[in-house]
Amino acid sequence: MNRTPTILSAIALVGVALLFVLHFTQKPCSNPSVHTPAQAGDGLRIAYVDIDSFEANYDRLKAKKEEFKQQQEAMENELARSAQQMQNDYTELQRKAQAGTLSQAEGEAAQKRLGQMQQSLETRRQSMSAQFQDKLESFNKDLHTRLDNFLTDYTKTHSFDYVLSYSAGNPIILYADKSLNITEDVIKGMNALGDKGATQDTTKSK
Image (cartoon, rainbow, N blue to C red; front, side, top):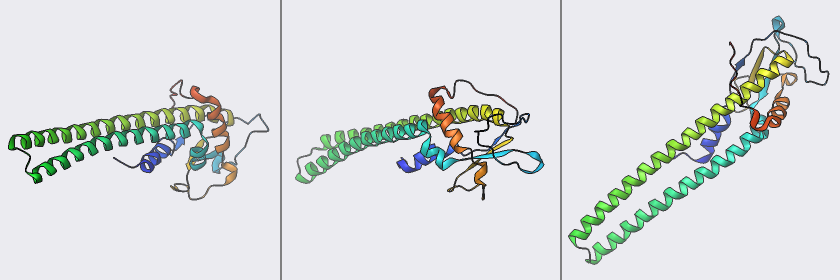
């Protein structure tokens, strides 16, 4: 089973490190306090979200990462206990065999039992891993929907044509003017939405 940092990295990045191409009718921003990124060539309005900052400050993501961490630790502990029990039984079997107190029938029965324990442990490991992966995929889908819905409304209000993702660890964008950064708006807005962020699945042409 993968270690926790690898899984958490997947949680943090899969759902949010993506490019949104949004086409809306441009209109001026009426709120003077709203952050206003600069315009790109041909009048396109572009902004970006710093994924590292989003990951560190989006409450739902932080809580879910901790939840997944605890679930993985619980699964690993359960598997470790089963493996230790199997190891203890094997050690006892060896001790009896070396002491000459193990009959052939007892040895064959013990060997069969250990084989069944090993098979059961592997089946349980595969089942738990599949369930955990399903939860990760479900969360990533939900996170994508929440972010997509939020940015759909946000770009309508602020008249952006493109919203890009930026991460220092995965620099798809090699340079980003900080005046284009809308991360704080996105974090505040999505935190304010709470559980309402995925109430509808927005459909739009791209």
